[in-house]
Image (cartoon, rainbow, N blue to C red; front, side, top):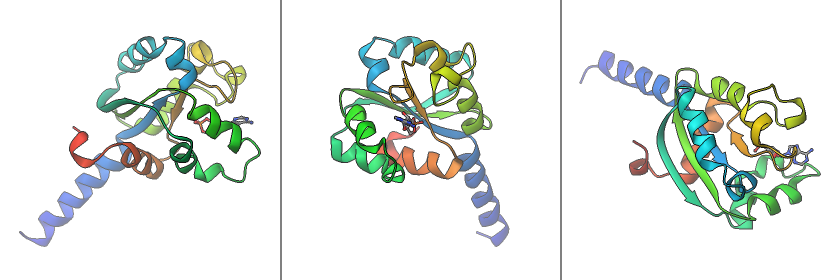
Length: 155
Ligand code: CMP
């Protein structure tokens, strides 16, 4: 295997992994309200392909680990409590420019500021209970996807 081939393989994987995928969680409020199906329909209608998905419930410890970046924020305790309060649906999604496209689809963190037609405008209650999570960078999409899914669970 020549160096050229190795580089081409690396470049392709980098493109595949870093720019075409994002990670999402349908949060406990949206799951409990029975909005999972509607939200998934919205996501697929926007052209995202589901490449991994699972229904699970986070322990407080796992929710704290997932949101460790917010540890110093005043809302961290509330966030951990809420995210471990009920089932969530975690998924890896694929689309061109996935991270930015998905953040546009879900709308602003605070549903009061979200554009009409976005998932948070349609389904979120408040900044804390905001229906859905979307990764904020390609790097975090990879980290968050690997938090929930092993290599053989990703199609
Ligand atoms: P999410 O996109 O999952 O990333 C971090 C989460 O922290 C965010 O959505 C909100 O649910 C939550 N969050 C952000 N700001 C606040 C706040 N001021 N009060 C409570 N929760 C918040």
